[in-house]
Amino acid sequence: MNPSGINLIWLTPEFPSNINDTKGVYLYRTVKELSKLYKITVICLYPAAPPIFEMLRYWKDWKSIYKAWKLNYYKNDLNLESSKNLKIIYLRYYRFPRSYFHHIEGWFAYLQGRKIISNEIESNSIIHANWIFPAGTFAKIISKKFKVPFLVSLMGSDVKRLVKDSIFWKNAKQLLLNANKVAAVTNDLFEQCKLLDIYIKENNKVLIDNIYESEKFTIKDRNETRKLLCLRNDRKYIFFAGGLIPVKNVHVLIEAFSQLLKNKINVSLLIAGAGAEEGNLKRLIDNLDIQNSVSFLGVLNSEKLISYYNASDIFCLPSKSEGLPNVAVESLFCGTPVVASSVGGIPTIIHEGKNGYLVEPNIPSELAEKLLIGLETNWKRDEIRKSISHLSKENVIKKYSQLYLSIAEN
Image (cartoon, rainbow, N blue to C red; front, top):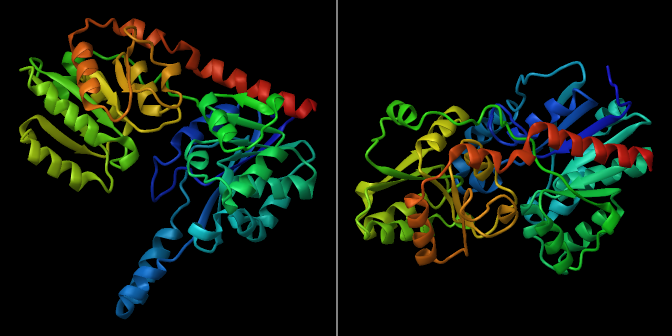
């Protein structure tokens, strides 16, 4: 049953797989909900990029390195819950190195996946690409060949990595000009396009949110969750979750936390996630001599995340740049206030004194000050959750329906 009469083809380079079942999980949530109204085929773009440099470096073991890579590559398919209206296809294709050929990777995907596309495309199809490259390029090719409309969702990193006058910029500029609609979670991404001299027609711009599991990320008893996590009730906790990578600015949080400890507050810092910066962050903690007050939790599944959101007094996100981060929204749904950098879409959900505080990135002293205020505030957790009621599943689905209908009508 497809009550809308619209056939959606979703293209995405990020989707849950056997290699990483949390990658792009928010997109899976979205298509599951949309499949109640639309017939949807999700084509997950999984390029083949053998570890050439590693094979050359350890040339004596190149066969075993290649076999290990190939074993993982062909295990991408994940038996996700689907429905009559939802089909998930893992499209494998070979490509050149992304550093130089990312802008034409969509062509490689199309050439090796054109039979799949021809079987799924219909006269009432709308192509929805997530990320400019490679999905946007792929969508443009399909649109031109089969005479169907396409839209591109800007995901944040795809815009922020563009350098003016580069080959990637030139391709992105043409692509977004030709799209029937361009969607984004925040106006900030449209503003960045404008600064890059990438023109998007005003009537083609659409603000649309991700679908969040508001029914899953809920308020739980703080004392009980602390008991389950073996955390103390006589202590304050600041929680961070995300990639341990430079853009997340975790070192700024650590420096701010070090300053906070000088106020003789009984507080601990909990850091969840993994990444290239982990070693540097641990060395910084040792240099500041605060290792007894900081814990690294590793990568957490959603159930653990919910527990830590609820057990913590403050969730902190000190990033240099963001779109509209899932972790901040999830924390607010759990009734935990957020102290975060005033970047990207974060100011659209954080209201000072109501559900958290905003700071300028890269200033540890300001972050320490706002964390202190946040820890001393008597927050109303129910009010914090209500502050983002506009991000409920029902409201977001309504926006998607309006978007697809406007494309179909035109």
